[in-house]
Image (cartoon, rainbow, N blue to C red):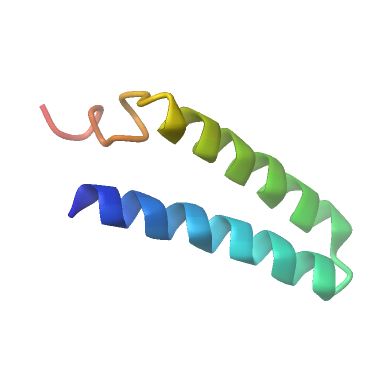
Length: 57
């Protein structure tokens, strides 16, 4: 369940980035794109916060 939630969160951030670019809000789109990239990177390495390890003890 948590993996599904993480994936939906990452997809939502990246979709928001693309939407911002389409609506000509380049600054917001760039910030969301960087944030999405960081989230994908952390998730692929199994970082504890992207696997909700910081929330579940």
